[in-house]
Length: 106
Image 1: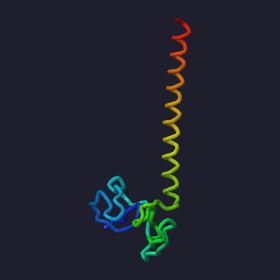
Image 2: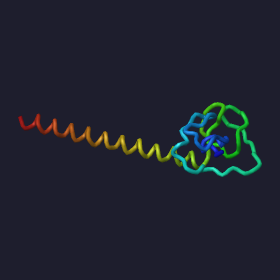
Image 3: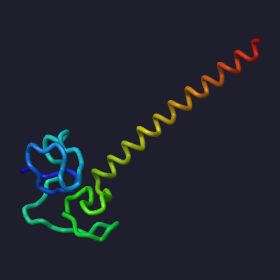
Image 4: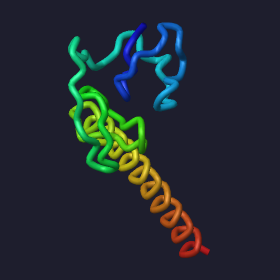
């Protein structure tokens, strides 16, 4: 048995998707979160259900918890989106410049 990196539930070692939170766990060789032997519970701030202390995602409502790992994932995603938006604007401005150049030389 191994622990799901998202909801901290125990799943089979061969599992590709967690049966509790439906997240893909095949990419993780080792769980990112080490849960203590005794399962400490916390309350999900969104749905107020009890979840395991080490959970990154609530198994009841599916909301990501405010943890270091989740904050890093969100920050990385925002950086990727910002870079994609920047690249799009650069190509757009270059295209406008080319069209303007063609129109002014004709």
